[in-house]
Image (tube, rainbow, N blue to C red):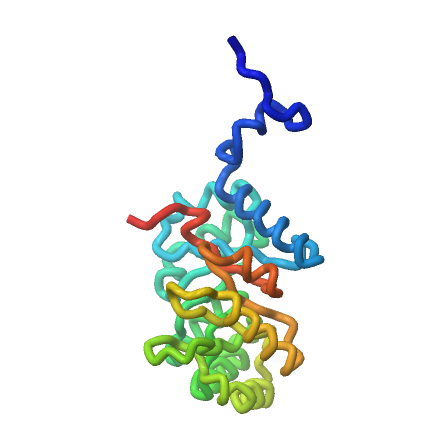
Amino acid sequence: MTSPNPDPAVPADDAAGDHLATPLEGVRAAIARAAGLAGRGADTVELIAVSKTRTAEEIAPLIAAGQRSFGENRVQEAEGKWPALRATTPGLRLHLVGQLQSNKAEAAVALFDVIHAVDRPSLVKALAAAIAKTGRTPECFVQVNIGEEAQKGGCAISDLPGLLDTARDAGLPIAGLMAVPPADTEAAPYFALLAKLARDHALPGLSMGMSGDYETAVMLGATCVRVGTALFGDRA
């Protein structure tokens, strides 16, 4: 005997639950819900699929499903897989979301469209020189050590005004601020603080939110969310 559909307003195929959606569809739907609650459109949020340690074979299904923004942590790893992927799919947008050594600045500028971890004057100088040499101008986010953690990258909150002045004087195209809140704590206060800092400095971009908290980040103003595990599953 067939069980009745518990909600006549919901198609039978949907009544079974969200398990029918792909991870990408689920994340996109969650972003749209969170944006709607904040009075924003989903198109104001860029979903960055963080593909660090993932193979080209793991990335390909997301590209086939229409995902175009991806994030990598290391320049060398990205150099090994993205030129070939880009050769077959135009319009891919590549983000460097990990820490960047100054001696890798030129390679990063040559490959990435957005750099999320500008956090010190020496890196500003290296990026400005690389931009002048290559003619490429990736968007840049200044990373803030929002939780004042000694082991984490990012400039101190007190150093942010000076670093922004240095970056602007060097001609870097600063799109906004980026931060990673402390682990195992409520992220919302840190997201709210980063949003306030961005407003104080007239910066429109906010790169914040990962697999465990991206919906909160969207509700608090994120323009970029960096999602890996929720799209690819747990790493081996």
